Length: 408
Image (cartoon, rainbow, N blue to C red; front, side, top):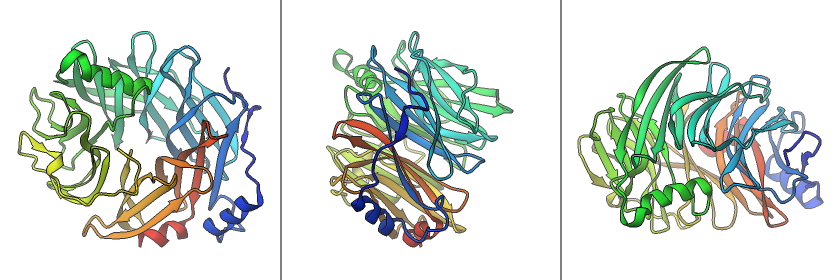
């Protein structure tokens, strides 16, 4: 049943204990409720799971949240959007029809609009969707590819990876937007996934979309020198592939099937990167490393780094290079074994740990994404469970002082 504004509400969390925790953890904001808050969102479709993907602040100070909702007659998840105001109070929501499924993060901000990729359920064709400040969606733009895996933007350029299931290839592509229309596109370049035994790689990708196995860390990016990269399957292995859209990769950082590889990467300049990686369930946070961009193949398991046992196994990790108080700061976000959201701030210049912030209490919380806000704070999107079963969105808003406290 589609959600409506009348059946979306805040979960009843105004218990004495919760009030005490909020007043201690999110403090010094008595005069401005928009500076710092925690909101958890419930609804009357009690047995439906909602999974968060990304959040962006709108021009009116509110926020657009992109996520998924479970569908009754499909293993795939539908596209769900929610708009809240500057205080985190619910404004409206939109469940796209069951025609469209499996949004691929991120929620990208370009020219005062917000864009995301998803696919239709009939042909699994990829579309680009534009969302306005009120959370309403314009007509989708076909991209001529299918099975979108990941997307991000650099300026007005949208970089994406997708799975060409007909030819068993991971593709990377780029489209430039101007005034809400696609001005130019670089054709997607395909690299063979390698079938393995009994189509096992294809099966892993499909299970990623249907959530019948763990979500895999697909991502895309671009170096400052103009080299594109994607994290996806190439030659039987989950690898980070660097491409100039030619027939062969420029370089490859190879994992081990789906059991080892990178979980995030940000280019710092030259051949310097900040990354995280996983190996047989273990997680490694590495704020400085060198990747040889002239090498055809290297192995991610050879990158030295200290294990981070506090995180859940094969933890999804969100990594961003942010400008905070005129300083560049790397922030890693993830989920701990104890059910808290953890934010780790590092200096990109030295690799030094600047500070750590934990969010969440009582119920288990899981990180989805985070972004800077116009008041120099941080909005953090995550999920928690209702009655220990059903996944729901949550938003943590950190004030400018709270963000500065653990990033200086």
